[in-house]
Length: 315
Ligand code: PEP
Ligand code: MG
Image (cartoon, rainbow, N blue to C red; front, side, top):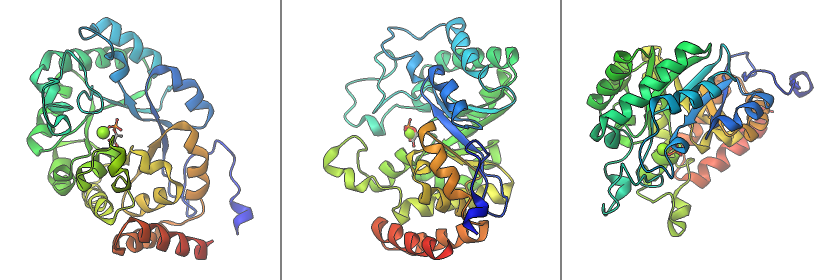
């Protein structure tokens, strides 16, 4: 009964049948770490590192970066912390890394592509992370943004290992990567789905453009089908599949994402309580059923509607 499922506010993420779904926080700098912990974050699912590079004329030094990474990692002793390598370009342009003359920056030299073209920046960042990792007790995972191919996955994972990082994965935010997740995950320790960009690229609708904002809806069954591909690949290979885009902060969609195979969810800390409460209302079998209903819908609105109606019947 519902009353039996009243949760302690900081209990770990769990489905009604006890399946753990770690609830992690997205962080944009070390400043948010303390409040994320206070709101019950079980770790960090996406540490965006762009803040270190914004407004800079050149990249920060290894020592400067190490200080910031240590400050953040120290807030999460024994906890998983997923740090994303610099994701520059398109909505996050950096003067010293991106070419402002590109006509389509969202389709240009961005994310891992830009890092690869300036590899020393990536090497320095991974070196700083390895040093911070050695000096702290968090469980550090690193991941690459905007990965499109198996070859890029192999490149990033090999470089991370060369620099002494144990756990290396990729973000899945390009449809090609979702479709080949079974092959990509052969070479990575984990995947994390970025639903913001995955939705943008699936619907071919600029995530910053108000006139096409209606397309930017992660309930779209086309997006969910791609998530399902990644979830199935993770399950088949026994590799973790997180979701760290905004979709994970929508409580009912979070249940659907778990039903599609997400093994952890990361969101802004303010969303943790609602997602935690709603996840605890559904079993794994129910989450899978809700996911099937969403996948079978014709569009985002009907997916949302059919899941809302069936979820109410489960309660
Ligand atoms: C995403 O694309 O969903 C994501 C989490 O990364 P960002 O929003 O920083 O692009
Ligand atoms: Mg992204």
